[in-house]
Amino acid sequence: MQRKAICTIASINYFAQITGLYATVKKYCPEVDFYLLLADKNEDEKVLSEINKRAEGMEYLFVEDINIPDFSNLVKNYTVVDLNTSVKPFFMKWLLENKDIDKLLFMDSDTRLYHSPEVIYEALEDNSIVLTPHIASLNENKETVLSKPDDFCKFGIFNLGFLGLKNDKNAMELLTWWASKMHDKCKLDFENGYAWDQKWLDFAPGLFEGVYVLKHIGCNVAFWNIQGRFISEKNGEYFVNDEVPLIFYHFSHHRVKDRANIISVEEPERNIPVTKRPDLVKLYEDYDNKLIEDNYFFFNAVENGYDLVFVVH
Image 1 (cartoon, rainbow, N blue to C red):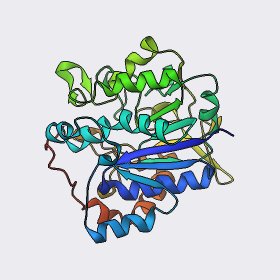
Image 2: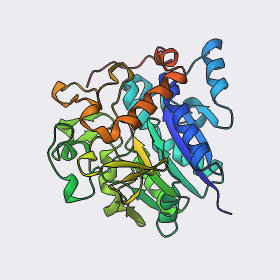
Image 3: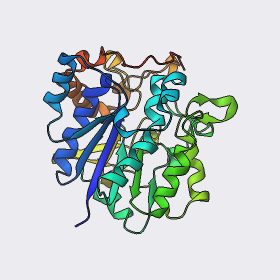
Image 4: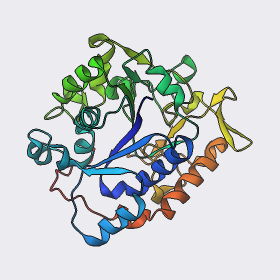
């Protein structure tokens, strides 16, 4: 039997988000192993106790456990967002090399499953690398208050809050190449064409074999594509456009302190109320309530253990 896994990366201040993702993994695919990398360090007994209380059944490591080459340079030059994104190819490669995993999915910690992800694992039967584009149809290629197609010229075609890999030569070649860019080119720097780890994967279909672009509208639903994806609920299950199951929703840029809004970003005109999309209200309410239940305010106040660069993007 093939061994399947899901992994995520975050700092400790996102542990409530991690707990929520893990709960949906246990609900919708209990046979799948779950791995967490904490891009952080902490020796506070209360913090570690709160982590261990919620980590039963998952395997978690701290970033220094995976021996990233020249890791001190990452810490010296990166913000907390840069650091969390830069270690992704190293962690995924470490898991594939050390945990006997056949198929590995990465999901950002502010993601929630609403259905089995088996359709994604099936895509990895005949492919090595699975990517999801920010927008996947002309219906989504519209300028709205939340999402502007020109954004993806800056941030990349694919959203790297998700990535699927098969443990084979193609995926390993991708991870090795991708990791080589992470020591000094994983930052938001539009002048040089960088958008963290994400925009580098625009090269993937041209450079590597076995790349599959998954356009399933139930996968990686988020504020940048909801203009063409509408959620409905039937008998306790969620669907997209009344066509396919909602596999996973990515609550990117949503903040509990501004929970009335779909996202909270620097451009105030984009911070529109969830009530503008009645189909999303229950999803966001449940998401926020689960975060609070999982001690969000405690974890959110935990500062990163590294002396990182502070930059407001």
